[in-house]
Length: 228
Image (cartoon, rainbow, N blue to C red; front, side):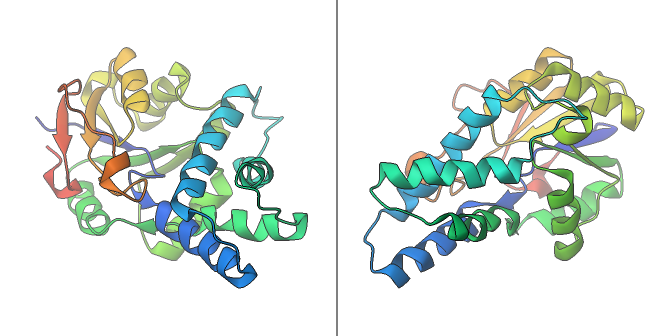
């Protein structure tokens, strides 16, 4: 079944965060002669981000930038691994979360999809980061939407409902595309269709991959060119 609009999560689904962040941390630790399990640090940093944003009371007029969340979290995460990172270095390392890279199927998959339907992002990442990234990566959308526009983070129901409204489509004629079950469950709860994207290396290793093993969602794909 084809839909009128496809709404995409970004970090992990469209863009690889693990590679750029791991390389930045590895360069830092190597330069300092510190032996640290880089993959574990990246995964811990990502988990710290989820915990921090869940605790934030955000509004459109009082928005705490996600980039600052990553920067603040690095201090706690590095201490867990007995590594001290000076405040002056934290901003530079946190900037690696703004230097993400598209998965190999993304450009071609989105180009094909835009020929027959609307495409939009719905990311928890800051608007400025998304706009700059997609301009640099030459990835085009019909709409770039992030949590900052709505003054709340996913999985708040209003983000999915209003995204459909902004695109002019009914939820039943739209599909949420993501590699994260929590995102798809929230979208499904307000009537959107769901497409799970299996990204085996989202967290650096298949060992840590998330999959739709129970067939919970409407579709499961491994490549954006498989989108129905």
